[in-house]
Length: 384
Ligand code: SAH
Image 1 (cartoon, protein in one colour):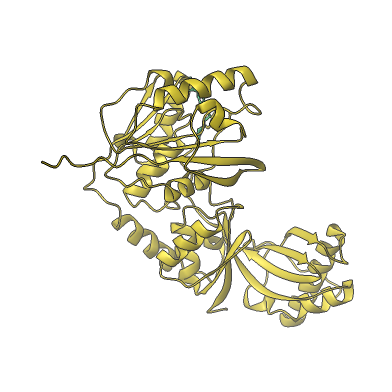
Image 2 (spheres, protein in one colour; image 1 turned 180 degrees about the horizontal axis):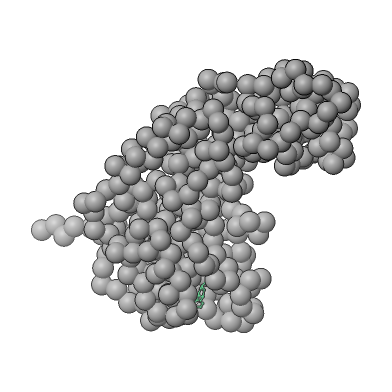
């Protein structure tokens, strides 16, 4: 089987650089592209990136790329790749995804069918099976993806399984949750550090608070879940266990954090508490039911992160305008606090009453949103 792999970490639009930074922090070289970050590594790299990356969607193995303007070229190109180094006899290998963009070949179901046929042919030859008899597929699953972009086909195997944003701790999520990896990315983009107070005044199911606590305590985000590669017979179970053991040993036990999540809706607070419990960070977060309009604090140099209701999702326009105005009034006195607010409302700044220091375009699923960033004033020391 293979020793080194060409890999990509897929990322939501706008978050590629954050994923790239995380990959470099794991000691790997990488190239940041649209929607993905490319890197290389061995099986331990696959384990490590799945286990530790907070902001990525998935880790995929790239088997190869080649020009494919016709079905014949696609068939021959797919067949020429070294599938036998990945797929053992008996493997299930659904062509889970085909995507054609700006290419001669555009019929995705046909692209899927040809890809399947070419891999079957390759494996029949390699494992000396007769061509007329279908391959048994009753073993571990390898999800194959084919993408054809401007007549260039790329063949990939997904190593992750359900997307990395699914950490496993969120059992209930309420009406409009933010994805866990997006919440983590926003925290990584913010100027929050574990020694600063953090408040999410519209915490819903608690995602920002929980991701912040996990980040601070150095809890690997994938510790509570499993991955597709764990089923593969050529991935040694010992290596995976060792990586998990190491990740557990790196969890910080010595920190006490100042993280608070509040929400108008008492049911959401119950859900947030349950999720924090499942994530192993319940003791580090103070969740309570409160209207954000009632938020007061004497603390300084903290960070507010909030994903308030937006028009499209939860409230009508007048209520949104009023909520944002009152939010602006409530947060205005917190001059030393940095404030990061994620909303799809393009008139947010006007309603909130202040121009953001910085804006960043992101996508929450398919919804275009902006992260409005307000940086707190540094508290000057008194000099005599
Ligand atoms: N980031 C959250 C989702 C936030 S949705 C998550 O990941 O689950 C917006 C939340 O704002 C909802 O839970 C809603 O109950 C809350 N909310 C609406 N108006 C509020 C108010 N005036 N004060 C506090 N919370 C409010």
